[in-house]
Image (cartoon, rainbow, N blue to C red; front, side, top):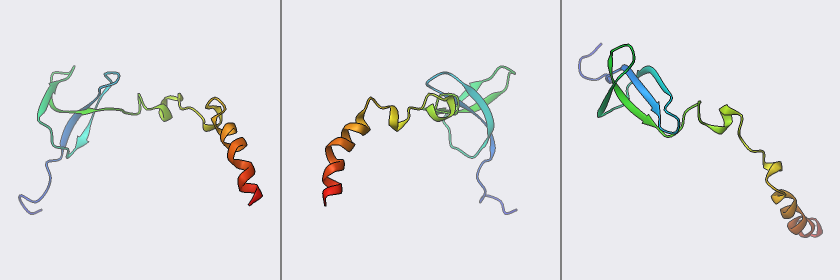
Length: 86
């Protein structure tokens, strides 16, 4: 491999800011902070707004469009008749 053209691929600790969930994986992401993890290693730190531990799709707390308090039905009642008339 040529020297100086490849990204810095190393282990990075990702932290979900919404619930504190941490996981370590390999990445090329640029970071300015480091964190000391449980096993004593000091790794680069990357902060996430959401991860699979907090995202509604993965946690099962996602709301269906049909259960949004009758909004869909209100829309269909209001505009469904005018679209069918045309």
